[in-house]
Image 1: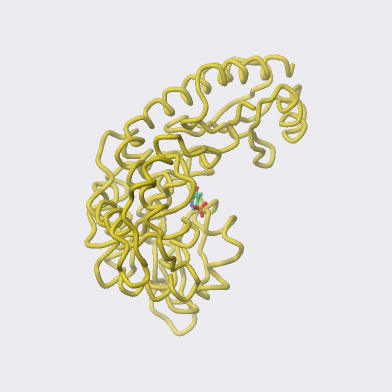
Image 2: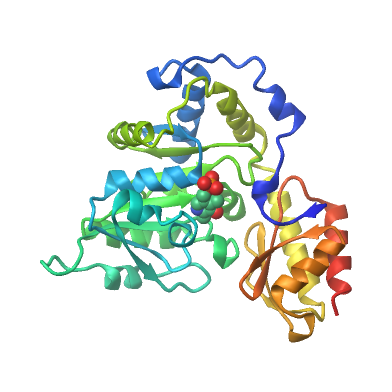
Length: 338
Ligand SMILES: *Cc1c(COP(=O)(O)O)cnc(C)c1O
C-alpha cells in the first residue's frame, strides 16, 4: 500500500523501537520516570517554555489547555476548520464548557484585525473572550505555515485584551523546518503550545504540552483527572526522544516530495487545482471528469494508493514511510483516472 492517507500512518522504525530497550523507567505519576522527564525537559527547551508534560495524544493536550485557560461559558477564538471544532468529539463543550468562535481564514491564516473583531468587549450579555487558539501548521488549509510575524501580531492583540494564547502545534516542527526558524520563535507569543510525536516525527504515541511552570502544574491535575497519567511511560518517551534527535531535519524531504506531488498532479486532467503546498500536505480540487472524491479514492485504492477524502477534495500527506516509489504509484494512479 502506498499510504498518503496521513502522517499518522508511520510505523516506528527498528532504531526507534530499539531506543526503548535500555531506557531507564519509573512511575511517572510520582515524577519518577527519568526518560519521561528528559523528554519533557527537552521539549520545553525546544519550545522555549519553562516546563512541559508528556501526554498520550495531541487531542488531550488541546483539551487540557482549554481547561486550564478557560472557565465554562468562556469564548475561544479559533479558525473555522480548527481540529478543536471538527475532530475532538465535542470536547471543548464537554470538557471545558467553552463556546468556540470560528474565524474565516485565508489559506488557514487570519489577521490581527479579525482577532480584534472577534473579541467581545466586557459585557453581561456576551461570553467572556478568554483564549486565542491557532494551528501551526493549519491542517485543513493544506499545512499552511503561519508567518512568525503574523503569529506575534495575533498574540499581541489577544494579550492586549487580556486573552491567553494557545498553539495547537501538531505540526509545529514542519513549520519550523519549512520556515527555517526554530520552533521556539513560532511559540514565543503563546502561553501554551504542544507538539505531536505521532505525526511526521514517526512515534506510535504521544504529545508534549509546554508552558509556564504554573500552567504545567495545573495541566497535571487535568491529566490525572482525564486518566492520562501513566506509569512507566519512559518506554514511550524514549521513542519521543529518539524522534526529536533524528526525525526533525528529515521533514524537509517530506516537504520537497509534497511540492513535487503538487506540481505533478496539478498538470493532470483529473485535478482542477490545489492549495499552496507549504509543508507536507497537498489538498486537491478534482476536475468534474474525475468523478466524486469518494469514488476517486476508491479507484486509487484499486491501485494500492491510499489518500483521504475531505468533502469534495482529496488530501495527500507525505511522511517518512512514503518515498519515490510511492510517489510514482500515486502519479500512475492519478493519470489513469481520466
Ligand atoms: C492530529 C491533530 C490533532 C490531534 O492530535 P492527536 O495526537 O491525533 O490526538 C490536533 N490538531 C491538529 C491540527 C492535528 O492535526
